[in-house]
Image (cartoon, rainbow, N blue to C red; front, side, top):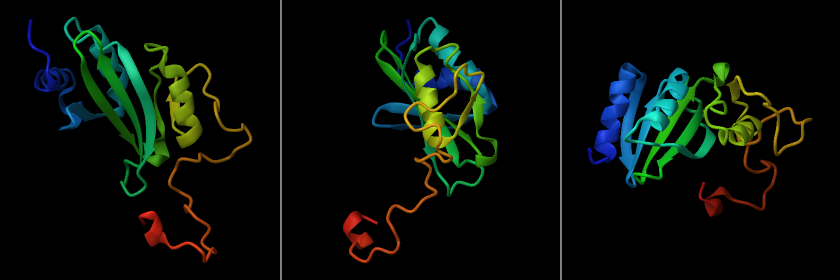
Length: 168
């Protein structure tokens, strides 16, 4: 049996995705890969079903907003964990704000259901094929997605606060 480390894991991901793997880096011992968003389910099921890897535990699924990244403003980030091998993988799928849609992982990973709903609720990212993509934490009447960086952090008319005191 091959020792499973980040080098071996990256090799398997490269063989599986080829040119659909855009970037890879390691930080704090966790391998992070950036992939084509249309390959998310293919990679997730590969990791889960691979006899050696056995990455069957999706510890987290979240969204992120990077308004300064042209055509890569929104992201869905998956955190996968192999409990058998004690190795983790972070997967990032970027998309433009004009096409904020990605395939649902909730069919293959039932635990993704509520995490996808939360990501939709806060970032507006739509998960194609999700059976109940509705708001989960905010009111249905909200017309915006509150974790997008589209709104100022403070009221610009206030004079009693200076940005230098808040790390800005």
